[in-house]
Length: 281
Image (cartoon, rainbow, N blue to C red; front, side):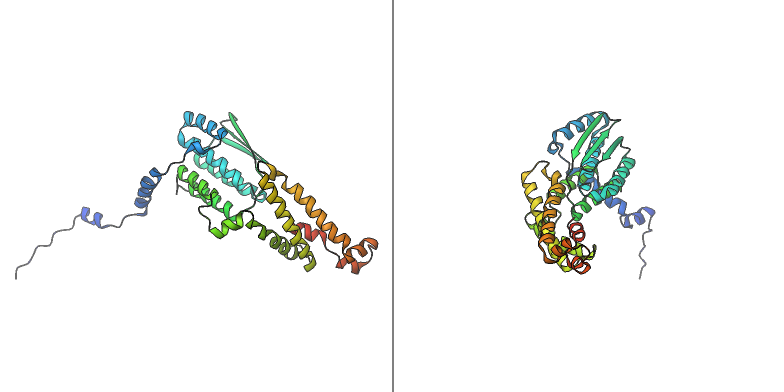
C-alpha cells in the first residue's frame, strides 16, 4: 500500500487552533454591547445637563459623563450617613482613575460638588435612606467602571436601572418601598433594643411600637414629597420620645421609680428608655 503524504503544520495553522483569549472576548463584548447602549443625557435634571454641556464642549463626552456618574454615585451612597468614608473613598478612586479635576464636600444633609477649580458647582440635599442592597449595587457599579469592566455609558444605564428596581427581586422591591417597608421597622427596633442595647422583652415591645411609629412618620413625609424627608429625624425623635415617655410614666414600675428613685427593684423593672430609643434609632 502506498503512503499518503501528511501536510506539514505551519505556525499559522497552530495559531488558528489556539483557544481565543479572554482579552479577545472582552474586546468583542466592549465593541458590540457597549456600542449599542448609550446613556441619554436628556433624562438628567436641568442643572446637571447644563454643566454636562459645558464639560462636553471643552473636554469631551466621556469627561462630562464621568462627572455626572461621580455625582450620582455620591448622592446615592451618602443617603446612608454611616457610609461617608466609603463614599469619599469611591469618589477619590474615580477621580484618580480618570484624572477628574473636581472636589466635593459631603455634609450631613447637603452635598457640594465642584469641577474645574470651582468653575461649576452643584448642590444636593440628600435625606437619610439606608438600603444596603441598593447602595451595594451602586458601589459595585462604581468598582466595575474603575476596573474597566464597563464604560461610563453602561455605568450610568445600570444606575438608572438600579434606581428603577430592574435588578432587584419583587420581594425586595416590596420591602424597599412603602407600605411594605413598614413591616421591617418594628422588628428591627425590637431586636436592636434587646441584642445591642441590653434591653428586656418589655423594652423590645415598646421599641417595636416606636419603630412602627417611626415608619409611619417616614411614610407620611415621603408622601409629602420634595425635601420633607430631611426633617425625618426631628419628627421621629419627637414621636418616639412621647411614646417612650408615656409607657414609662404610666407603667406601674415606672411610676414607682419616679416617686422613689432609690427603689432599685422598681427602677430595674421599669422600661429602659436608652435601650428603646437607641434600638429605634
